[in-house]
Length: 561
Image (tube, rainbow, N blue to C red; front, top):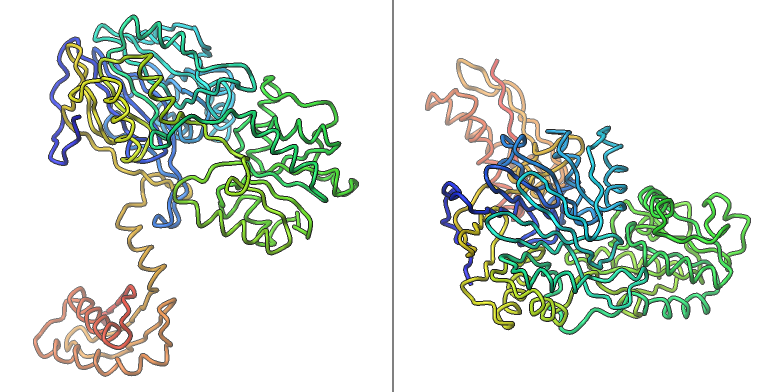
């Protein structure tokens, strides 16, 4: 198995007749999926998603893929294929289209409807090409065939890209539910047909490669929901992803059976379910869904609320209910169902919400104590079947952290794919398919690009480091006025502190030290303000460290008069 090397330099020129694959996001992380294919000087992009920030990225709203390598080549991009409508696959599109609004978007009906609604907020009207499984479209030199795959959102597609360099298949996100609610199976017959034709390179979803066995069918959840619905005394509040149409369908069905009305809460939930209903993906019996404002007229045991916030997001409806900061007030006897996964890194936030809801008397049903969630990604058993059906000549695991990519590679090797034809890459690592063999040839820039409020890319790693220090240790500012000729102090020092845990009155002890240090530097003839500021920073920093064992940020300001 070839692994990326940190010493990799920029890739050489692509040999004629070769196909270049450059992942700009989604490898080594779960999120911001984006892959660029290059053939004959033209580019095809598959997916362009966002990653949601972790606790060590304070103030950041979203993380985008790095467009640097394609920025001056946007005229060469023939299209962006969107495999499905999840944020980690479409969320970055508005930011790419801001730079060139006429790049065509190619996707299925629901995927395009979701991205168009998102682009409306950015005031962009995209060029779109709607496709469905079985379609073949020529996009520049890329002959694209679309295949049905089953996932936790309807209408997901895999794409087979044919060029003279060979056929590459990108699965997008998929699993193999054999009894999906909409009857739309992952099309293993089509994958086996492509396998017969010869798949030169397979890019395969690795998210659940470490999980043994098979993902249970989505419809198994409905019996658990029915049981919860039949025993719930008061209101039922369900938190789910705002795109999991089939999960929400099962909730609507259970509500209908038990004579309850349903209200959607939260902008994304109301919008997405409206789109799904209008396009016929969500079947809503007449009169079942009501506006949240009409709920006051209904008894508690006839109400179901469907909201977002199943990942413990602080601003989402569920967290705010747990914190008593929402118009829906949880009372003794309410039932809350968290019908979703635990995305790695969100565990603490989710348990905090569960505890908050429980404290107000809710009965909380979640995947830890009931079968209310099944994954959207194929487990190891499914991947083994899949690799055996596709029999790719080269394998490149995608969509996963390092442990997932490695597990996926090992499953591929177990089905007989030669080790030297399995490529484990990471973001920015360039893989070239030349003469039927895939190998790593270089590396391009593919850092994190932070969206913070309205700014994109202005926040850097060093400013996040500053934010972490400020958040952990606080800040101390010192203001001193010195005479420009003598270097003597004529005003101050004034010291203020925020969040450092040191009382302003305690700074009396360091004042003489500052006076002494500045007097000594005046004798040495140092009058340059930058040097004096460094001197004050060192003096105060040493005192705080020695006295309190703390390391706040120290901001000295020295003004000459």
